Image (cartoon, rainbow over all chains, first blue to last red; front, side, top):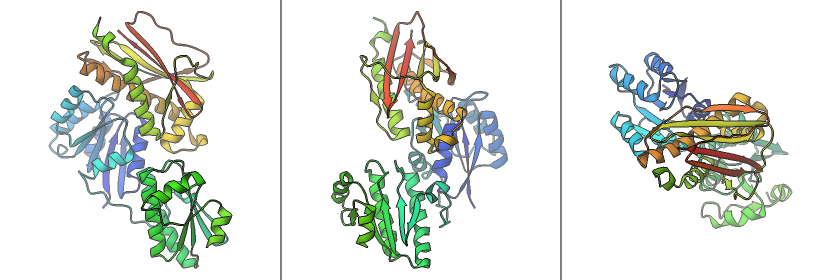
Length: 247
Length: 156
């Protein structure tokens, strides 16, 4: 059964970041805009985890947490507090209130997931299809050659989504007898550890499915990729024409 | 010299802004030298948080609405045409809250305990911020891609 995660924050931006972070995982996200809504949703939905902001109008996160801890049926729901304030006093107050963990804003989605996995068991969605419309748009086909147009700024959340999508794409390619796959890094921006790890995983997925994979990138990126153990042996081309001809 | 005078307010703000841009936008922000005039358009948006207690003041971040839309696009992975004014306002408010929250924490750690307000947003045409009676005033301009923004900090 999918986990229920309640995010309580007056900022739509933060709620969206939280939602996006949990998107690859099998869980249902419920949203509240302040402590009053949060308490009501907690009582109704009995979530497995609450991600709670502190500074909110109507009822702030501290007050909501106090009321939550005072309610027998809700007091054991684990809470991760979000705060823009990293001051000693603030942190001490949060820790004393019995929260499982806290995060200081700004934070990345994958940092939140890292904390959440220490509290609840998150499982990736078992759907192999390319369910994320943004990821689906990254795939092109050109005469039997499938091209992954890697988006810029790959973080761990996007990487998980792309990894899952390529698994589905590999099955699709096997079924249609296609075996040529290009990972196009033209838009990818700078090389990061997450990107290198992702490329290695994608090439491994292709190998398992007997699909030939090549990288397309700019010359400035070529040497960098050759320098990583994970990507050093993957064939690299500097133009699409060259990559297609090299298969 | 008061406690407020001893604090490296500019350093705190530069650190907080750089951290917010690096973490939320995965991009480095360039802090502009005070000799450079930032390029700010006419369609302005200002995020503001205030703090009160042993230290009083506010953090205000001003930018062009187009800049706010671009930041929203990067931060929430949305196409520009999907973004509503309300989304951009929320992003600017949250960024101001993070920068203000960091400053408030440092003031509290220095013994200047204070409380932080929730962010407010002001948007409009050609206007500027002018205030009087502050012990410290800082103005820091920063560039992200081709867009400039200015942080105004007032403390007493």
